[in-house]
Length: 338
Figure 1 (cartoon, helix red, strand yellow):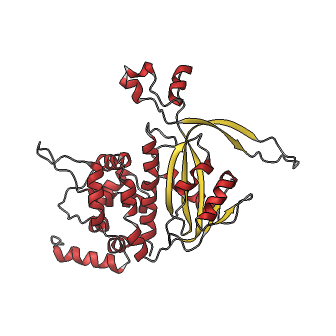
Figure 2: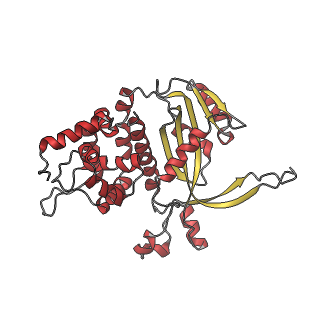
Figure 3: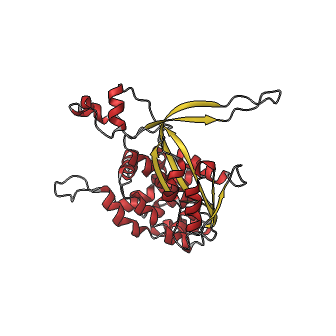
């Protein structure tokens, strides 16, 4: 009959995990988690506890819990179970066997609060230092692109549509806050063109055009290692080329190469002059170059980290916040590589 497990038994198990190459231990060694405490506390805006109630979990602990689903492809319920079950998860989070573990609802609420906060960019910027220490450099130039995010269609009258385009609140909504809360005043319509495949006999078919309601996600990434450096969310009707100055990383030394790749939506005399003036080499192309899959992978990652396929946020700020949150998880996966 085995006796009760003691301190040294757990320490022995931790040693075995370290010898096996625990990626979470490496992540703790590379990322200075304490630097995220101040921006997270500012984003969450929690009470001082004067009114009583159960004290909230440490924001850095909750932020580290968000890492686990990104590394191991877990849902919130699975994350809660495995934190209670795995010693490696407990050591990564700094929890003891007797410590209280956040449940799935708490994990979900923390992600929601962080999404709606406007300091996510500050949290994202704190990863620059650990990335540099790990030897990750922005190389190969930059790729700029945009993608559509569909939103639920709205049934508005002609007068309400006119008020929305003018930046006003429709008179019929002013006295009904519940109805106003359900109206997305940032979303816009656009016509999306799709290339038709050739017929079985090789004949060229007519291209397809259809209306789309939603937003656009604009990103600027490094060609290597393929990480987002700049991002912006706009309504779907916004012209891609007009957003180039916002998503181009213009800092000195931000990338080891000066090339900028983009599709023909960004081609204009103004953009070509802007690139030349800032010391960039334009590769705004007609045909897609090799390596385009890098930016498509980023869009797929952002889509994978959304809660739903459509954008059910009623604020464009929430659509913007999901980009760095998805990218934080990708950065963590990159840092945890053996």
